[in-house]
Image (tube, rainbow, N blue to C red):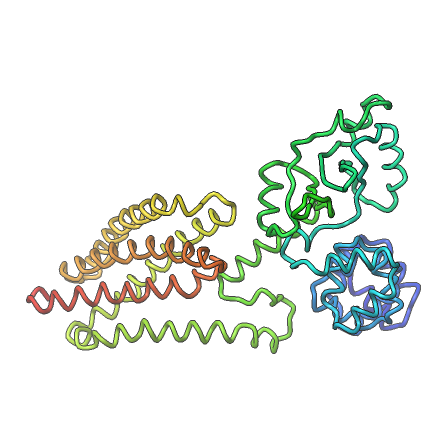
Length: 445
């Protein structure tokens, strides 16, 4: 895809050339092409997209580009685009609009779809209700196989990706599901009650989206019914929704572990990136001064044995690396549900043992390297002991801090960038310089 061809068509105001270039592309490829264009060029291209294609493209671009494209079209055009979306996607887009614009759009779409979207907007965006769609095929449990197949056919144009038919009682309470293959192979006169799976996994509307993703992974399902507290069927979650959730959660954790705001994108202007990163860097600066204050306490020791200043970063740096390893394993375990609070003692003991073993290994290696540089054995012993101490601190803090954050309902991924690094910096400097001070006091240095 030569984007320069498209740019030339835009520059020459060649409408047919723009259409010939863009319309044969898949919506995800169109979205990628838009990221390589200037803001004004993006708007020009977007106006040539039919509503059905524009609806898919809006879901593929980042939120800042989406906001810009939406602001470039009229309310009437936006209503036409949203009419092509599934209810969950339409709700996500409308939720990003200013309140007055959102109300205008809701009044403009069909009454039935408007009612469904309003319902979805009431749920938190990171809950099962926030990611579910109301388009589904459901039948009463006393319906026959033949009647159910006719219902599938009748709704096939309005309900995409039909994998299962949901079965309810006369009051709308969820009873089970029937897969399409089982439905097709069953005898037409049978009741769906006789062939449905009554053990189907289901989630309530307030279930967190991370837990929903874990259920999809654990039970290997492609759709999941969403019910309310009374057991009434409200909607369904499909595998494509969960893929988006998994991607969102993974990158959210990566961003938080790096001390980044999750709203930042690689193509953001420098001013926006600066505003989003600065608060985290200032927080890191504060913790760096905390570590520096420990060094200040032992300033006299450093002045007496200047060589200590050379090896301080080694102890602190190795502790930080070890803590990152520990916290990555622990956060992953928490995210996948492998680690629960009942496992805390066992995991903590394991990580402390690993830290102790790694401390002996890296401490020994550090002593050997220090000796090759002509450093005294006494400082080598200091390095050895401080390395073991800080590796244990890394294992302990890398396990305890994410568990504490999880206990207080905060994201455990927040811990690595600031809290754990602070622990290993302070612990590394304090153990190394504290031991050096003791050695000086008793005449070993």
